[in-house]
Image (cartoon, rainbow, N blue to C red):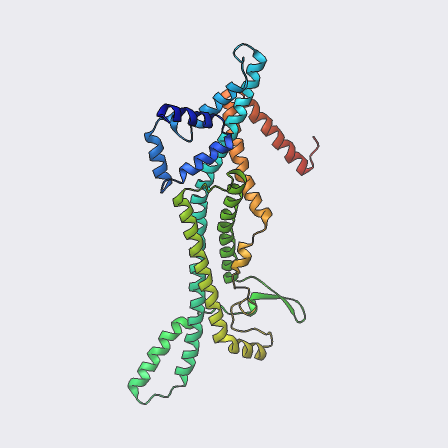
Length: 354
């Protein structure tokens, strides 16, 4: 087959591609490069009309023209052709924007959520370690207090050690009477502690990262026939982020288990000896409320993931539609109609008479 014949065959295949097929070609091309920057540099070196992000618009225009013979002479045929062109271009543009925007969201939002979660997890671990050290300092001080020194030098060293331990003895995040409020005799309502709030923050941020990944999968399956569409560096960054989060949470959970093994007997004795049933455990620790359930975080309800994906899809479609209407000079009317519908919906939700 000659080069000319091969090119004609390729042109014939291209001319029959749907907007979705063009979008899949685009994301496949994006995945051929190590990063978004490498993809952009390569595309910038070529001709605009050959770019996988631009060429489809040209071919889809021609496809519509070929579907309406005689459009040059008949006004109604011309209008039908232009409507078809707008429809094809908007469909492809929405998918193109969906791929580009989702990559940006994953890169920016995913990194911020992961870094914030890592910082809070580090603070959580540090706080609980401080609690353990304070507990150890108090126990050591009790032992040193009872230690009988043999001479003046030993006594001087004992006093120095007590002063050093005193600097850490007040670090205590254990249960306190002020952590709860009486509702009725024998019943108290307990307020979430700072540590429980930190745990809740880590859970929420980790869930956000997992939800981003799940939303990407939804879009990948629904709009790109299962073809991955994240840039390789974005995909690797997300995978690394999740791996680090999982590792950090697993290490934190393991430490909670170690604490339970070390301090369980103390907690039980303290609970029995206290009229209020208060122990030196961190609030929520004995009940397992500080444990972070990774499986539960991963098992996000499908409706939540679908809502996230729908928001990205809606944004891409709205932007593509606005661009198409701007090209045809209809954008002002479109924006007015959109605003009118949104205000109408708001008035309905608020119960305001139309």
